[in-house]
Image 1 (spheres, rainbow, N blue to C red):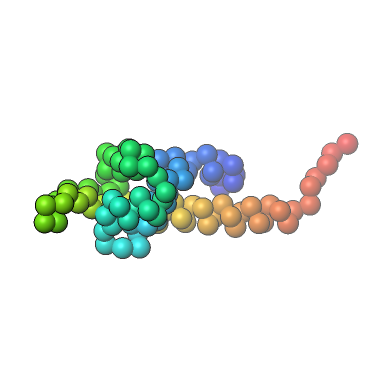
Image 2 (image 1 turned 30 degrees about the horizontal axis):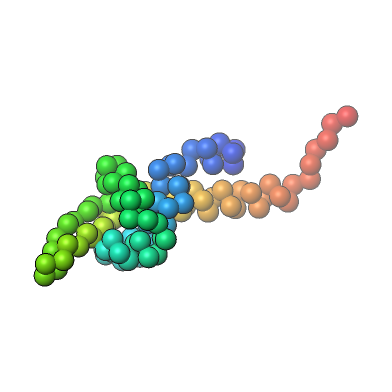
Length: 113
């Protein structure tokens, strides 16, 4: 069984980055979200949000759809099946880490003299 620190080091760093974790979490709660909504939710600048979305799309975790609503461009993001599986596995890993940390906190330190 890996130690909590090994498990922590094994977390997917692409997803665990706070902005991308917020994006993935938001997308897991809906079928799709537009760029403006994600920007308001995360507080990211347009450039930063665009960069994070691109990284997630390159990994196959989200799908990006560009369309027009009337004459206004609109960008929609949604989780792919791979992305939904990845975020669920990430949450499970975090939950295991939290539970293991609680168990470790209950142990008596062993001091050898």
